[in-house]
Image (cartoon, rainbow, N blue to C red; front, side, top):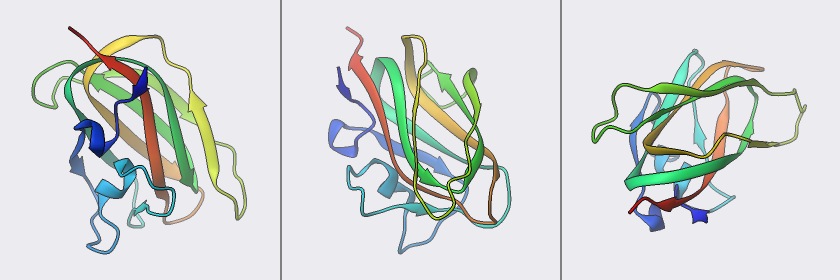
Length: 138
């Protein structure tokens, strides 16, 4: 298994609810820990990672700040529609520190993952990187 969410693996950001040209949502999947995507001060916020093909995926790792409630959903459709819930979690508040979490999900297939940030510990949250263990489905 390798990180199928990287832009270098062919993945892309299909949708993001906030945009700042200095911190584009593509920063989430660029493989760098030095870049990030910030949200505006309202919730919910979301972004969708689209894979290059149907992938068999496992655990999701996320590096972020100020995220409180997060829901991850998957779609196996060609277009990012008809999402099904995968995980719904609450993060611990880590004052002044990055939040690192590995979300254990049962191995499943997906073409797209939607990340719905339901709430935050502050008005603004940032997503620094998302990695998804997976392989292409043949």
